[in-house]
Length: 113
Image 1 (cartoon, rainbow, N blue to C red):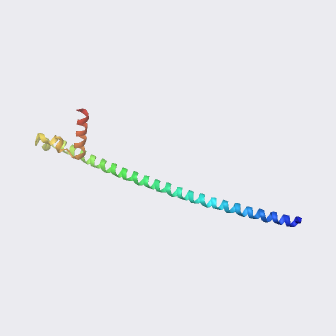
Image 2 (spheres, rainbow, N blue to C red):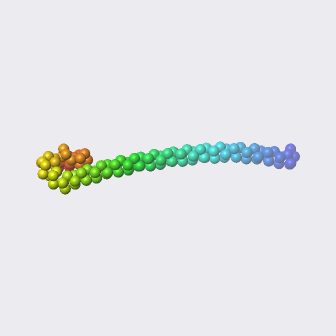
Image 3 (cartoon, one colour):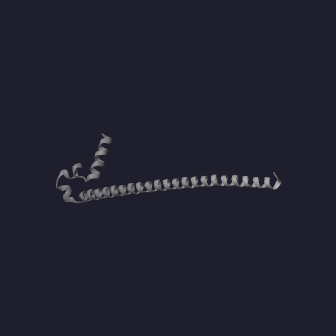
């Protein structure tokens, strides 16, 4: 085999090896891109779900807060109205307190009993 044929054979083998290596690298790059895209989608979904759950929790807490404030206003109204206080002993009984305050009073009574 002449020197130029040997050199051509080496070049051809080197090119084939480089092409194969490039193909393997491209496959790995595609796999990594897919893995990163999948991970990004999962993280985005998890963050969105956590955000949605946090918003629902905040909305529930705000609704409960508003209900409690309304209950407190009703009790304040009753306590400030002389007719409410005079009309009977029953007015300040736990059964007549609005929902949240009634359960709050019952819970506190159970803890102190």
